[in-house]
Image (cartoon, rainbow, N blue to C red; front, side):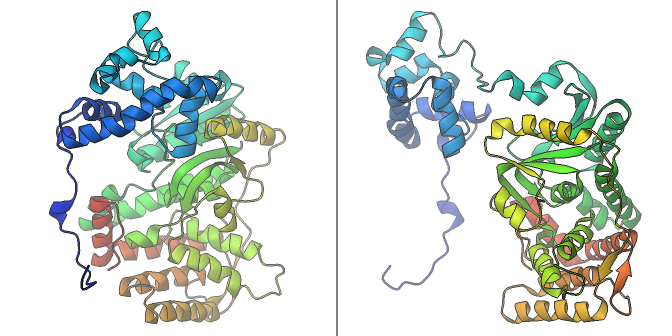
Length: 464
């Protein structure tokens, strides 16, 4: 403080909670351990969270219709993973009161539950506050799984609408996920009227399975990497070209490959809190699951007329991908071009899947399948030079690293149409080939492999 010199915080000063060192049992187990422990942090927990729980149990009748509404408010509005009454049930009423020394002054709600022979407020320790008609995936699972694997399952939600439910860690997209997406599309086409893709988790998907990609790249298995990218591209396009409407119900993180899937689905129903983006540059790559191609197509579609200069629109898409911009909300995702005017936004997260089903039903009647665009305009050498200039200026200004510039030039190459001699129109397949070639060439770069490894280890981005 005297010199104002910056000193990095030593790693040893990071807090370690002794009460939780060996604790298992998820959030419920950790909260219980903190509440009953002898440590300094346990005393702090009792004095803060403990008092809050007792206060809530006393005051709720004057502020809410029922305790479910209180839990909803704290989870939806304040980001708690469990509401206060869910926390009380997770800890146990007797354990909580004894830890707080409040057994003689228990709020009426807790005392009544104990008098009825329960150690929880609710008859069970789990709480599902949603109305039955909103429980789309749980109701479908209760009727049985159509087909499934470790990454996803296909279920029948009724009325001819099937669903692919993602349920792997962070819903990372690998071969198993692609297989279930393909199976879901096939089942809906042959036996149904539409398909939704959704998850019960707080994250829709963090993108492609980077661990598998890194292993193949480090081993030099380029044919395997090429096959992975081709399979991803085919699956993404199958969502657009399906004979029935396919709607993605997205929420939370929807990054990389998951964003590319959303760009090609018939429609998207997005939770208001959706963080969407093509973030591949952060791991040393470019979007190669049809994302670069689609962002170019959408950029050109926003151009008022064919006679207008396409550069400002293409440059906006280039910067969105090049800087790995992630939306701060569904509304922001629409402004960035990730969502279209016809895509829906759900304010109440609990309604997301039901709203997605309604969107499928609305589009099912007389549905006309999507198809590849006849051609896509590319700017050729002039466009490439303009995008390269943007990379050069950003690098000179210190906004991007040396390797960011390398990736930026690869991305510019694809958006400009590769080695076409002049501005022209090319096929979708041509651009997908450029995407794949750029992706494969970057996979072989040590800097890209270092970025992927760093992200897998730390969850952060390495700007080498």
